[in-house]
Length: 211
View 1 (cartoon, rainbow, N blue to C red):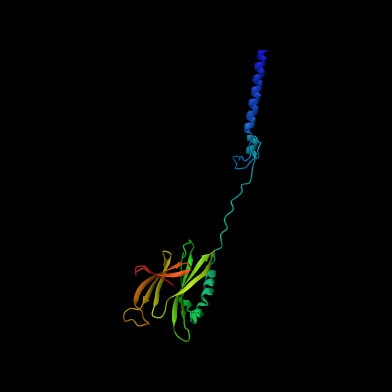
View 2 (tube, one colour):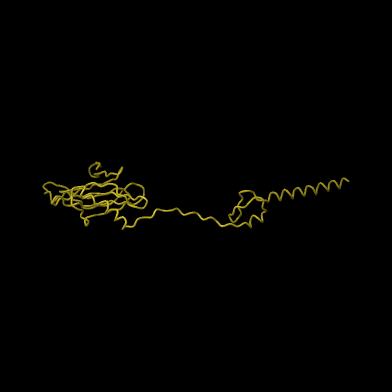
């Protein structure tokens, strides 16, 4: 009688252990199989691995289209077209236009600085040279600001970009120079700040003038 009791207890324990083992192998909510698929709760290990799915591909970020050089030229032409009349001249000398590329506002995107010459006015041969800033916004150029950088008796010899600024080499009035013929060489940097050009003289203790 005692032996039968022990045998019954052993059988009961084995059944209980088997039930616990089976319960532990069932999947739970949120489980993911080896294929990377999310599986429902209550599946056996074999059923879990049999679940298949189609991986969801990551959505590529949408980038703003970048304007072509031809489109940029249209923006520049439209912005500069009224400048002659606004500054008392007849027209722009298109052939004298110079463009430099570089990041003007520190956002890591390439912008444009345009040096252009306006001529004539009231039948005279007057001229003035101006510097315009165009920032790249959402892939397109936007006109920001323009200011005169030289006039009669001065001459811009060269323009380049560096250190976040537009750099110019100029000729100004030297001792004994006629107004038509400047010979004194000097350099000026132009920094775009708060939508306007700041004129910086690197050889003159970094003197800054707002234009």
